[in-house]
Image 1 (cartoon, rainbow, N blue to C red):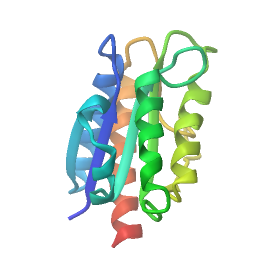
Image 2: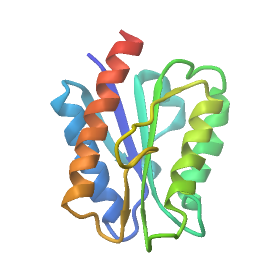
Image 3: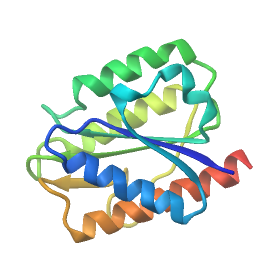
Image 4: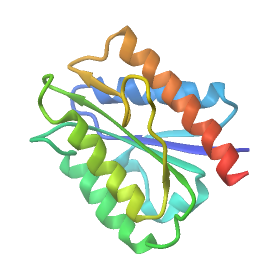
Length: 158
């Protein structure tokens, strides 16, 4: 069975709400999902997952320090996450507040780990992003994203 980790940092609950919907979508695709705040995840355990999705609020155009610290700790696994699927999502305080750069910063870390990242030609090209609390459209995009990543992981990791 495909195993997906959805980890996140959320101060206000917006990013957590998105994470829950991504997990829901991955479960709909038949994946086993672990949903956890980043502080509850030991980076050494990342090798047991076929897909790793991280969510962070946007702070000053990038991810929260808690997420960056998690990625920094994952350096110990450099070269050991090749071929896994990576994804990212964010909630931001405004339209032009750095949501895309936040998602891209997380995706860059996954790419450096050798992970597979898939964009979409539909809205949310890099990964779901909410302005403030996620609305119905964003929550639906989160579910679709979770499903898509779980399906991709099943294909890639077989």
